Length: 121
Image (tube, rainbow, N blue to C red; front, side):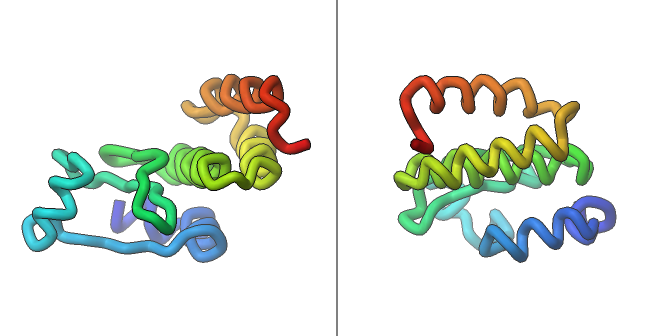
């Protein structure tokens, strides 16, 4: 991840715009790893300001799959924090820019569920 995914311009741009990165050695932060049930590295969590986990990506992921996974996590965090319009907008961008990503089908289904609930109106 350090040589391919993290330095990729798409990853850097998305993280700088939408996230606050925190990198922790699981041995040094064993309590934190235990609290979140981290068993494998790399594990990337999308958590909100209260520390609630909304999504995780486990294992090596190339940038074409990593960025959509981060987008999905941010959308779920937005939804969980009452920001439905932002959540829908993030899924729209994910589906527009990464329509063949491994998470696109799940994003489509989640968006349909949210629209049925009246999210984003």
